Every structure is written in C-alpha cells, then in structure tokens.
Length: 622
Image (cartoon, rainbow, N blue to C red; front, top):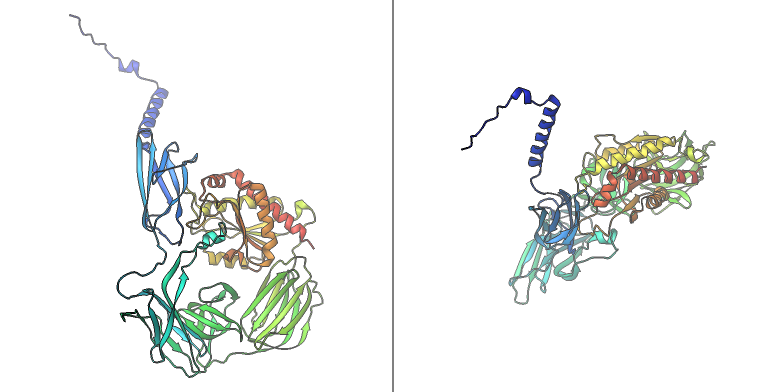
C-alpha cells in the first residue's frame, strides 16, 4: 500500500513579499466588485415619468427615452426592438392608446434580463355623451367663473350634453328661455405639430352635443350674483337641468372702478389668459370695466380693451376719479449712453411701445391722454433722434412717433419718473471696434445660462440641461474674452428664479443678451424628424441678430434646422438690448446629447455664436 505523505509547509519561508500581497488583495477586491456590480442589465427611464398625464389630443404615438446598462444589451419596448447608442441611451417613438397605457421595457444581456414597466395616462379627446337618458355634463358648463359686466356686454354660455336635443338657458331674475344652438364643433387641435412639425393642423373629429348661447345685456338690466341655469330636453320631453359655476353681476352704478398695478413689471393681455401685449411698471392707473373669473377687463380707449389677473392690481377707494391729462410739452435730454424723451404727463397711465426697424422708429401710444402739445424741445447735443411728431388717435389715445438716426436700434426703456412724467430712454449705438478682432472690445455681453434652480430638459443619460447650459456659457465667455468683450452672467452656479434673472437682465446695461439653452419637444411629436438647432427672438431689434446666429450655427454644427422663431419667451422680452435665445441641440436625442456633452461641440457652438456677433456689430457700426 502506498503511503500518503504530507509535505511540511514553511509559512515564513513561503510568505509573499509586500508588493505581491498588495496585488493579490487588489485582485481579490476587483473580483468581488465585479461579482457585486454585475447584477444583470439595468434600465433607467427618464421620460415619461410614472403616472404622467399626456394631454395632446389626436396624436397616435409618443416618445420614451432613457438608458440601459450595459450598452451591449438588447432592448425591446412593447415587443419592438429599440436601438441602443454607444453609451446605452435609447429613444423610441411608439404607438399610444387612450387611457392608462403601459410601456413594457425588456433589456436582455447574455443570459440575464430585466423588465421595467412605465404607466402613463393618455387623455382621450372630448367625445359625444352616450346613453339612453338625456343628460348634461356639469363639468363642461360655462362660464366657469363669476362675471361682472356692463350694459352692451355679451353673456356667453355653453355646455356639453346629449346630442340632438333642444337647449335653452336663463339668467335668474333677468331673462328666461334663451335658445341655444347645437354646434358641430371640433375639439382643440394639437399645436405641437403645427408649430414645430410639418405645419399640419391635427384636430379630432367634430363633437356633437356642444350647445352654445349668448345674451346682450340691455341698459335697464340688473343682476347681482344671478345664477345661469340650463335646460336640455329631447323629443320625448325627457329633461336635464344644470347650473353654471359662474354667476352674473351687472354694474349699473355709473361709478368708475379704478385700480393701480402692483408689480414692478405688470403684463396686460389681449384676453383672459391670452397673449401678452402691454408691459407696464408699478403704480399705473387702470379703469376696470368688467371681470371674468379672476381676470379683470381694462378699458384703454373707446375701441381697445386689455385684461389683467386679479393679483396684479390694487383697487383704489370707491369714487377715485380717472385722470385725463393733457400733454403740453415733450422734451429730449442727451445722456451718456442714451437719449431721454420726456412726455410731461404728470400721471401714470397705460402705454404701449411699437418698434419698427424699417424705418428705425419708436411709436408710443399713451392711453387716457389728450394732446395740447405746443412745444417739443430738442437737446442740441442730440444726434440720435431725427424727428419727433405727435397725433391724437381717437378720444383717449395720444401717439408720439420718434424717428431715429441709427443704422439699427440697440434698445430702449420706458416708464415714469419721480414726477409721474412718462419717459422713453433710447440707447445710443455702442462703441464698436473698427477691426474684426476688436469689434467687441468695448461691448458688454450678458450670458444667461438657462434654468436653475429647475433642471430644464433632461437627456437619456440623466444629463441636466441647466448643467449643459452653464458649460456652454463658459465656452462662449472664453471666446468673447479673447475678442475683448466684457462678459457678465445671470448665474455662475446656483441660479436665480426666472423672474429675478429677467429683472437682472433689464437692469444690467448690457449691450446684448444671449440666453443659452438646449431643447426638448412637446409630447406627441416625432423626435427623429423634429430635432436640431433653433433660435428665438421677440422684439424687432433682435430679429437680425437672431437670424445671423441661427445661420452661423446651422453652418458650423451641421445639425437639422429645427427653426427660426418669434416667441414670447421671458429672456427674449427685455427691451433694453437685443436679446436672443439659442437652442443649439436637443437634450432628449441620444446623438445630440452625446454632442452636448462634448467640449469640442461646445467650442464649435461658441465659435458660431461669437462669429455671428462680430459680423452683426460690424455691420451696424456707426
């Protein structure tokens, strides 16, 4: 029998040296880490969020994006194979169904897999009411808020009910049995495709059972909190009744209601929650002539009204008279960087500025004022203003036209001085360098890295727009500094809310404002067809600069042209300087997110933007 022998192990003599021991320990830790780290593929869904509500009528598909790790995995969403980019990012545009809808996302890597579910709610378009009994959808009854009206105003009412019936309404204590008409009206269209996509108008099918009616208030009518009641009946006399949430009050007092603006910048609109149109400072006197819910109607002239939200005004004591000043004197004053036009109004009343660039002109509409103008005094040092003229437009509108000698407008500001006289400050052309490399040397450029504290758009890998915007701003600033420009920022790290950034921009005395962003599209649009570079402006003085930047970006970046837009964006609205908002690329598209992360791409963006600035200012050097 063979003997089993034992070999004596000399621990001390066989002990590895310290370096070998360290390598063995590190290798052991590496193996443990790999075992712990790899737990199969993982899926991060950035959009949509769980239980998101998608309200985009008449679309049939929507996008979903995120990231899968490892990037070598295979991804299937609702049984469709989805492309993974080099960093594992994905973007898909898939069919969608109304109601609760689930995205089932399956990632497979080798023999491992993971299933992630994401549920959203897609709001169905408004459809007809069905059923055997006559009924009214009380949630559709209008008006939704209380009305305060004058004689001559219309009471407009409506609801959705069973189709093919007879409808009427009554205002308690005022009128009864006012007939209503069933309209063959379509629901609201999907604006996303019209604005950003092909331009097509996507609208749902006509909806039966929408009833509308109106009544004009007569001079002798009177009502205080009067309820609006609806009645709907069919051919069998089956009847449904409902009451609108909003009641009617008619102002027959004859006493004007006077209020004043409360905010440093107060916006008046063309209708309740409609377009911005008038931009007023604090303390402007307003004549209130009606209310719809939480929006008040402002009488500007015999033919012009505006609307304002209730939180923006403070009512003055009942019986406060409406001022109606006469304008006797207009005077100009030449200051260091601007020319001031003072209209001796002695009252703070609404105004609107209309700017044109061909010819270079500012027209001021002063509401509630009457001309008695015998004097317009020009400062002899003034070289900016070519001519000032006035005219009376109707009973309560004084118009002042200021023609300018500039090749291009560089900004203006308007408001009231400490004596409540209206002023219009017009910026002089900045001192632009003669040579291409020094064109920006004496100019101040304000950079606004958009967003923060909010994140803005988020890319498939979780890259936040606010961070991308700041990185781009630093790249632009570096190139501007090389050209000799002074650069200021609205933020460097933690940011201010949008309203405060806007106030900072208006007070900055900068020559040009650039707001830097990266884009995303609204729900329902095809992200593979709608992506690339876009640029935005608001005032005429910013149009040419915005167009020049847009063209340079398209040429330099070679991304799809997402569009050149006039848009009511906060950081485009300052009048004090040309202001442009720039969206070089899309956060949500994996290919473009990869570019946005790249320093090389940011430098190309910065080059295009600064080259466009130089070209623009040299063109309009005086």
